Length: 452
Image (tube, rainbow, N blue to C red):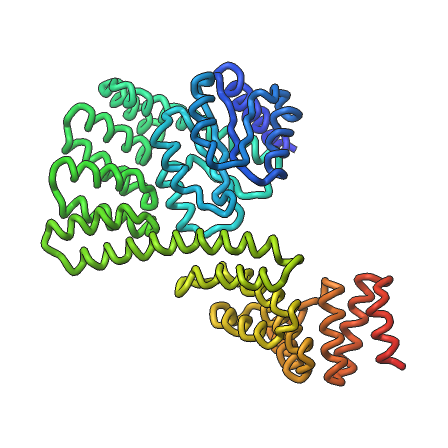
């Protein structure tokens, strides 16, 4: 009971934080998204849950206008929270996140994502994302995420924010005192040592700044900010070897940062390590190329999806372009494209070509049941029933429950077994389809034929 009460009180606290931000603090939300479902949830959260006027939200569906809308809104509003899709209109928004953070000091950024690789999120955090929202999300969780993005919800976090503000104002002596208060409240606080380092650096005491940053790093192994501060400090003092050491640590944590690899390569050139410099430059170019090709692939896939149900031949063309764009960089994230290409080929009667594509995909993910199921269907469409049965049996050996919760999958597997004259297995799958949906007429007829 007390736990539920605590949760309700916390939610009220989070709600009040957001209401105050949009009211007293002159805050505003900008959402850059082509996901109308999420836009609707955010709008309903503001209007219904928080009872705030709809003027507090501006929605943009075209990424080309984001910077202009932020600039125009900044004239009227002191503080902004920008919600931005990680991918918008098929385009990665990482560069846009960096531009917004570098241009506007009063903007907090929340990146909206589905499933994505961890390294990509680390890079987004490094270049300016203040928080992330994985969709779908409930209203209460959304309010909590926004509240923590706007300001820390505990005493310690508020002290840290106040100390950072003192550093930004150039009030380094007071910031130093504030950092000591943070460390009294929480000894070994990485954030406390970080602010202390900033204060010492502002006072021109670089040795003490370095010691504070090192303590911050020692107390938070995965905290990138102290490492970045140390790398910048050693750049100021001209200690290239130490700067390189911290850049390498950062590269381990966030390996997708192309610009850092160039910085590391530049130091190796100055140190006379030409071979290592060339390796880093080559890796940087390779990563930048991969990012560009990924964008081309995503655009091609989006076009293919437009044609998928209307024109399988054109869909095939663009799915192939999407895969060709990735070249040697194909990975598990491309399996869905292989599946869609296979379906486009099967709709044209090209079942053999579909099987070739499924086999390519299985080299990437050998244990993908859905891929193998689609392959079995292609074999069946080509009337190669022994191969279809063999493929289904491979799936069921690994995943005995495959298809048991889907009437269509059960029916299709039953048809494959019936064509192979494995009546016992065929009956099992037809009966399962009817258990799921007693009115499934096709399964009923197939079972009658089998029993007749």
